[in-house]
Image 1 (cartoon, helix red, strand yellow):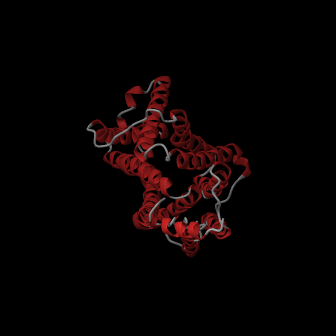
Image 2 (tube, helix red, strand yellow):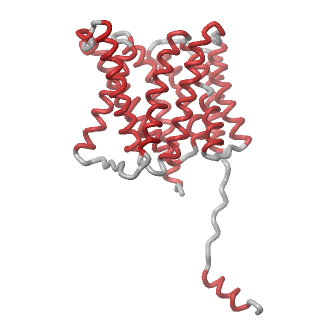
Image 3 (cartoon, rainbow, N blue to C red):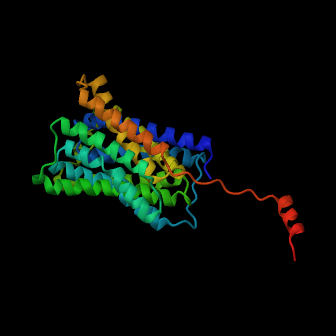
Amino acid sequence: MTNRNELKLAYFAAVLNAVIVGFSFLFTKMALEHARPMDTLMYRFAVSFAVISIPVMFGRVKLNYRGKPLFKALLLATMYPLGFFTFQTFGLQSASSSEGGILYAFTPVLTMLLAYVFLKEVTTRLQMLSIFLSVFGVVFIFAMKGSGIAVSNMTGLILLFLSCLAFAGYSVLARSLLKTFSPAEISYMTLGIGFVTFLVISLTDHATAGTLDTLFEPLASSSFIVSILYLSVLSSLLTALMSNYALSKIEASNMSVFSNLSTVVSIAAGAMFLQEEVTVYAVIGSLLIIMGVIGTSRFKRTVPAPRTFHPDRQKFYEDKKIV
């Protein structure tokens, strides 16, 4: 059973994870100014996998996959990072980033449903209301911006929905696998598979187009290097470790709602670094998101404490038993 200190650390990891992801939108935009999406993903996972491999090679991080369900772990990697980023990348080619933001806000709802079906996680009514409050906060921000969902972008919308479903499936399956695997083992495998897959895709694209000589051109830009370091070390490696740790301690439906905090962070980041205007509706939506996250954490189902067995008391009743 998770003790109070571990629970506090798990919630701290969930919040920090959302903060890092919130800032990642800025660095992703910077990176995409110098490289194509698949090349950016290749560099991102190459660096993150290289960094996590260093403590593994020196024995500072112990990995043991013997006798563990590797097929399920491979299935996990197909959901995230492979499924999530692939569906998202191609979905955003047909749909707008605003539509992606609106759909991504519904990920906690999908996670709650999948967690109920596959993990038998019970969500209280107040938790459900809190999750929907958080989702409404995100939708409210995008709606007030004048952003909506265009039915004409149906292909992109379906792909974006599949990316959300992939991430929800990852949260639920990871929650189950973390009873067998350590957070480091899950993170190492998913990052490694992501690196190999995106490397093959990137090399294939360049070989087909005859542009292999341009693969390393983005490395001439210092802003690209800074962006990749943030996206790989912080927004891929550290977030993978923190989210997996949090999922090992708290429910998947509870963890997923923290992702909506990224919207609040991205608004703050835009105001601080891009001098974007912070509107009243952005503040209202952000407050709704924060209230929803707090409510989801506070209104969870309480589990009664197990009864303590007292041998002396049991002996007393046995002595008084009438035969």
